Image (tube, rainbow, N blue to C red):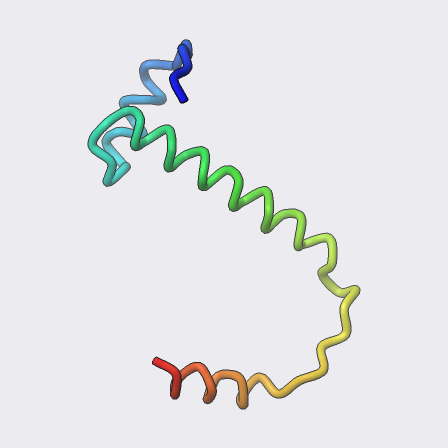
Length: 68
């Protein structure tokens, strides 16, 4: 999708230095994905302390090791 944006040049330059992406598009797309991921995680935090865990974490960890 093509969009025209007015971006903070200092923020973009800083992000370009820190990002593995080589283009502004790469950096902006990575930033949007990270923003969405953080918002999803924040949404999950509302369940913190409200869900009862019933399971064996050691068993799950063993299962993950075998599948690799």
